[in-house]
Length: 160
Image (tube, rainbow, N blue to C red):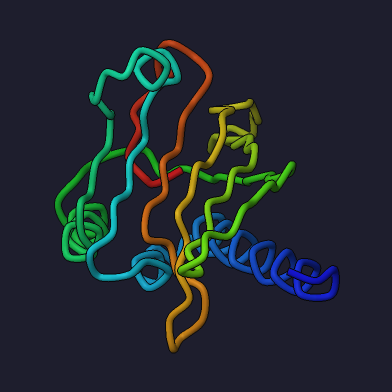
């Protein structure tokens, strides 16, 4: 890739990350699955499991229909305290395979603000993505949210 091509791809990847976090931070969960291809994988997994090769995520959706079901359940079936998330994403690194598949990694922090007004770091970790180009633009083929702690502080209801 030439430098201008690399820079353009970086901007596209940053825009995809920005859209992802904007959708979650602004409670537009119905839009969240649209950022993935149909046969996608979405996981939230502790780094300890990831490092030891133990496939035990705390959240797993292995296609876009499961993601849509999760959103419907969050809106109509599950009872949980409403969360106010703010995501910060940085440190984007990526490589492009010959077939155009992009492997990317970036760090994230999610700050949760309670109804009482307390803000705290809810989770920190890294996104490990496989991204493909579609007619609609870049979409996640898989997104693994690998969090750094051994446990989740409170109920994990919405995507990270």
